[in-house]
Length: 274
Image 1 (cartoon, one colour):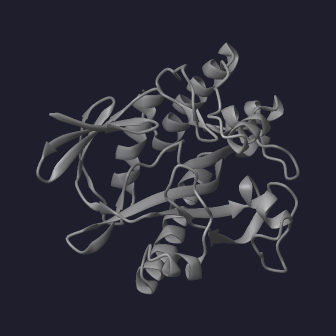
Image 2 (cartoon, rainbow, N blue to C red):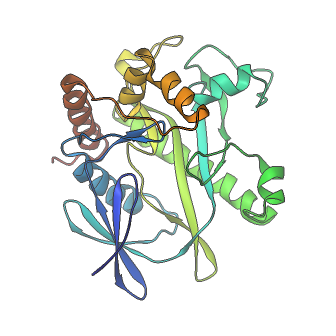
C-alpha cells in the first residue's frame, strides 16, 4: 500500500482506486498543538468506535471493513470542506462566542455553564488548520456547499446527534456535542472520516452538575489541564507573535486517566470488551 499522508491522529494509505486505509495512532493534539507523548490504546479505541458508529447509524457512510485493531478500510470520496458541529449543551467555545456576541441563541436558552440547550443547534466550521465558525449565509458565500447541501447537512447532523445522544444516555453518559464530516460519493452526500472521543464531548451522568466544568471521557480532559495551567493562553500568545506553540509534557496521571476513560467509554457505549 502507498502511504498518502499523516493527520493529527490517522495515517492514510492508498489501497486501490476506490478505497483507502485509515491507521489510527495513539497520538494526541489539543488546541491545534500536537504532543510528543502518546495515549496508550487511544488508536484502538478510535478505530473500533469508528466501526461501531458506522454500523450503528442508518446514514450512508464510507466504511467497508475493519482490518485490524487500529485499521479500517473506507471508500474514497470527495470530502465537503465543512465540519458539521452539533451542540446540545452550553459549553466549550459556544460560551465565549456567545459572550462576545459572535453567536445568537434563542431567548429561552439557559446560559449557565453546561446547561442543556432547548434544542440541539447546528454550528458548523470551515475545515482548516484553525477552524472558523460559519453560518448558512457564510457557507454559501464561501461556496463551501450549496443551500440544498447545507440544509441536508444540518438536518442529518442533528438527527445523528440525537440518535447517538440516546445511545449514550441509555448507558449513563451525556453527549454534549459532536463533530461530523461528510463527502460526495457517486454524487450523494455520505458520512465519512471517523466518529469517536476526538469528535465529541462525553460526560458521565452520575457526576454531571450544571454550572461546573464537567468530567470528560474524551480528550477534553487534556484541554482542561492545559487551560488550568495557562497553556491555552500561552499558545494563543505564541501564535499572535508569529511563533509555533511548543507542546508541554503531559503529566503521567493525565495520560493514564485519558487512556482508562477512552477504554471505559468504548466498553460502556458498545457493550464490547477491549
